[in-house]
Length: 522
Image (cartoon, rainbow, N blue to C red):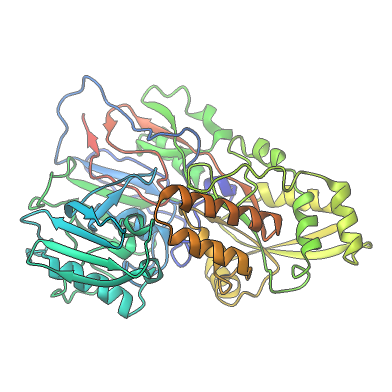
């Protein structure tokens, strides 16, 4: 594979979700649209959406194919890790009380409105009337209560995000009341993600291969390692989808997507900036930049030597020329801390770890490695070599010999993520507002700092957004000053958008690809 990390999907949540890389091409009767699933990304600040002007009415029977680079091994959104599940199913098939856009703005979904008490401890949600699941069952407040209680009681995926909930009760069929033990400024944001999804209590379907939700699309077909097919829910309780079928087809990398774009098989797809000349003259497309929360992170195993020594961690950081990485990738942003500039708590931390090879050599000498240090970087094989080659040469300049061990993703999951058996690793943490990983000493980073954990607790019990952001900012600075990892870059992905397509945002599509407003005109 020639793809570099900026154009390969991945992420903290992409854990356990990487499907086979090569997509078998399928003949389909209408137009296809491609989007890269685990990558897109950064750039401008606002939702960038393709707009089709002066076009005929959209065809609600049209079939649209989105090219993705990650697919889940199964569809169980309650237990299976992986950003691809969130990306493909949330809002499209499953819904929560509220929804959110790429910038984190909260909007109504199953709940048409809600109120918050003066002490920020009681949230009262009023459901839209007439909501139903795709199997025809009525969706009531009892389903909301059961879904959240089941998540918490059985410790399903991301249940910790709702730890502030004390009680949840149904008052009639259309009112849900949530009381908190402490204020929680992240509650609505978390309810707009996996923890807040509402499932049918009476359904007995196999969640690994089927999905019964309340969204505007139905799950029609799931082929592990190949594709997910959604069809328009003609009985949807809200505004109907504007396309008939959405196909999410797996592609190996952005090179494969670029070929599909130019072949006319794909109308919406991420383009490697270094290869954009190959499509720039194609009049069928516009090129759009979006923003994303992706953080390509050089993880240190903080619980294993030599990274138990802060001097070694700081030496590695000082040896890395982040500007050179951005130049090699053809775009993106430097990143020197665990929070991107579109998330609460961001601060420019470039002064914490400037490129300084001389300081790196001195730190290594002080730590007892004046004669050199051998390190192993374990990285999923679907990442390319652009960044790892740069790191190898940059670290060599300060006396560090880096051995790059490219492994199958299943091996990475077992050895690095689960068993924490590694020295260095690279992964794309794509999720927004995921600072909680740095407050969890059991996470694969192995980072354990009581002050950071205390600040995280203060942030998540704040009664206002300003305090929440300030506490996160303080905690993020400590994490960076402690050299808990190195944040290599915040990637930028260029997206080619067919001029006939509208209603699909190019922002943060690696974590959420909402096609409910997608519209295509011939």
